[in-house]
Amino acid sequence: MKEIKAVVRPNKLPALREALRDIPGFPGMTVSKAEGCSAPSRHGSPANIKEELTDYTPKVRIEIVADDPVADVIVDRIIAISQTGQIGDGLVWVTPVDRAAFIFKTTPGSERF
Image (cartoon, rainbow, N blue to C red):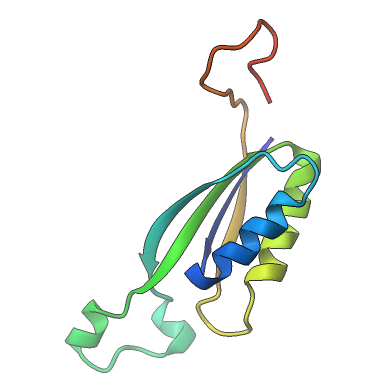
C-alpha cells in the first residue's frame, strides 16, 4: 500500500476529483485547506519583510491511501490534471504504508484494504 499526498491549486480540485473517481479501484481521498510558498531560489527572494510574511498562496492538500497497483495511476492522474506549467502548481509525494484499516464495524477478515 502507498500513501499519496499532493498539494495543488484549489481551482484544480473539481476536475481532479472527477478524474480520480473515474479510476477503477479509487479508494477515496481526504482534502484539506493549506497555504504555502515556494523556496526563494525557485522565483526570487521577496522584496521586503511585508512581502516575505504574506507571500503564502492558498492550496488544497489531498491524502489518499491506495493499493500499489492503483497508486501509480493516481499519481499520474494528479500530475496530468493539476499542472498549468506555472511555478506553484504543487507537489505530489508517495510513501509506503505498512498497514491501514477502515474505522467501522466490519465482518471478520474484511477490515483491511
